[in-house]
Image 1 (cartoon, rainbow, N blue to C red):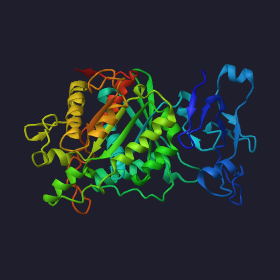
Image 2 (spheres, one colour):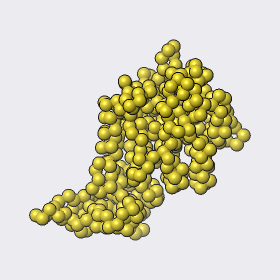
Image 3 (tube, rainbow, N blue to C red):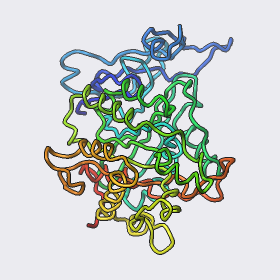
Image 4 (cartoon, helix red, strand yellow):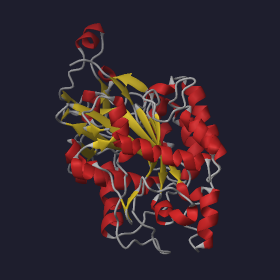
Length: 419
């Protein structure tokens, strides 16, 4: 097996999969109820989780040496040197957090999802995965939440968290609560694969409070640098122009506080400066959430919504029916949002800034193939919740568009398209 580079989604340290450590899988206990394979402590593990003498399963390195590195990783089961139990569980060699086996085997190419304050990032990612699992088969895509969590905390596993939140949103029709800024940031990892092409990628999402956005960007520069593409969620209802008009309809309070988009630009500028990468090579989706409010109030907001509606109904993504991604629709939607940013929304600097992420020098045509940025309008719910955060129905709108566009731009996945 050829060696592959891995970027740990916990500590963001990069390592070769020949360097991944094993971890004992034994759950056996003795007559006194103690683990037969005694739990151990590690200063690296303590440092990550900001604790002291935290218990974890025993870990040990793979065989090292020139010949082992030359041959590549075997990744077969190995006996735990402490108890003899055979294991095929892997951890990062830097922070000792558990990583999915398929990530160690296949590498860890990732798409990151980040969000500005009050953007509804958590609701978006739950709706995105729900729709992928419902309609992904039309593009031959499979999305699987991985079981990743720190030792002894299964409630933190991506699959368990996702199921709980999916039930709350789609069955109970209740908006997910705002993420606390005091909780520990734990990555959610979803394995996205396409069996026909043999390609796969990981969606990595941190359920962090939006107020920590600038801190996220600063701390996660290395992680974003290694991402193949980035989805940035922005709160439509935090735009001053939109807030002021909706207040006249007694629809104020549906978004967060007015966002300081200069702060967002500053944070992203910091990422660009520190990462030192060629930004035109990274697809970047600028996604405006809660876009149903724009469409439903298009006349009052003076927004040209022709690209979003057919008659009096919202026109959803083409691939839900046809299995093909309509690139001309993606282009026209992006252009309509960009025009609003430059026009009535009064956010020309953000539009100009966004274009710098994918525009070749001197090229600002948003539909030029040389550019790798797009604007999207999505809705995790499809309609506005009531004052209690309850929804009459949940009908996600265009939530898959940004991801499918990024997969298309990467060129590795077979995404059927029409122009």
